[in-house]
Length: 117
Image (cartoon, rainbow, N blue to C red):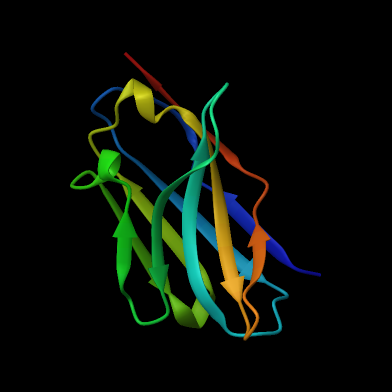
């Protein structure tokens, strides 16, 4: 059974930090890309940051310089260090993994991040 289990969300004041973790299990193929997306109320899900198996990263403009994505390939785990958080970062954050030759997509259940002003 494929599972992406997220942890680390919560409530924080503006300017604070949180670290999200996501461990993937049960995926039979090599995971090529792991990343984080987020969805705020009334908005579409958007890319936050992604990292491939070689360590190359890509970030949304809105989080560049504040968020850092990293990955432990041996543990199939991806992390998102979020610093200088803003109220507009408030959203449900979803872990994503793309695996195998045909690029199968897997999603976590989501973790709530709330930033108070």
